Length: 81
Image (cartoon, rainbow, N blue to C red; front, side):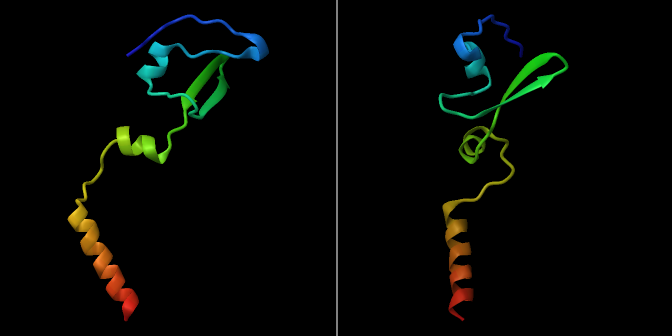
């Protein structure tokens, strides 16, 4: 998917990311981004944290609360020996 919008550079070279672009790549206020100069272009990419991956990332497995409880009991048993 491509979204193309124009914006302008403000004081101190501040650039506002248009809402449509931010929503398309799921960038929220306060989130950190990486800014790079690549081949005469500026590339801005979001830095994903654990919360983002939990909400939007590719799911590679599934564990239910019962499974967590079972593993917890096993580990506690090991520690009590």
